[in-house]
Length: 432
Image (cartoon, rainbow, N blue to C red; front, side, top):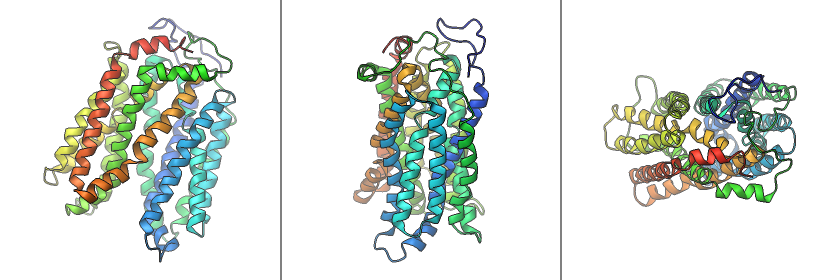
């Protein structure tokens, strides 16, 4: 891809228009990310069917099934830094294409698994493939769109989290309940995945830093350049806040069905409580992701730290809303669940935009990869166990209140980061 003709920018050193071909590339990356999250949630939708077939006599079948999710997360977060490093040296579209094809084939292999061990191995390969995609795709978007537009564009990209997750759960559930059986839930994601992966090989690589013309050129970053991340307060505080947010999201997603069952919550009409929670998550996440990125971009004209301020406001506001859900009777409590989910996802676009804006294009892929590693280690890799332990020794209500406290801590970290954002954004082109 080549740079489009640039008009006068609204800020010194920044392009005013996206790079030529940006919409095509964004459309492909959005489609890939959608199938990324469809694939992740398909497993959750068919988990009971798999457990009954592959672990009929196991002493602790649910714990073993949980290992499938753990295997994916661990592989994903460990392999991401490797591909972040490679993305700064080789073709990013080739890496993305290979990653998509690998995880698509691994998903198909999940349907072929005849034993639990085989299924565990295939989920590791899914994590490997997604590890090649996760830290790379946002850097391509960052090189296609200027700073003034990145919040909105990142929001469109990350819409795949709530929408794709809901679609995957619905797709898996429908197929599992049909005469096809659970294995076809994995087979169905293979053809579109292979097609999307193949399309990546036909796109030309965008120049690193194409949307950041003021960035100092770097041929091959080394340790000194990566070390600069630790001296970028906005990056560090953003990552720690995202870990808190990820902790809360995974905790809510894991334990909300159990909490609803404990409270003997009824659904609405023929809609079960679990399905209703899924619909609320998809709708709340969709609206919040769109509006969060838009709010960050619009407010940036008045507040230099807008991306942090928007993210912090959402996460801090979500804590009392989630807490209120514990004390308000149903069906009114569904309103507070929707609002809490909305607040949890409101920061998705802005926080990822911060990562892109405060890092030099030459090390941006590694920056995203390290972020992935940290937020998973401190976030969703431990939150189900931590909240579950609190529930076992005290109550599920206390477990949810603990998540509320974590949300407040994350919001305060983001408020702290607001004071550094403009400085770090201005220094990013030369901080290497």
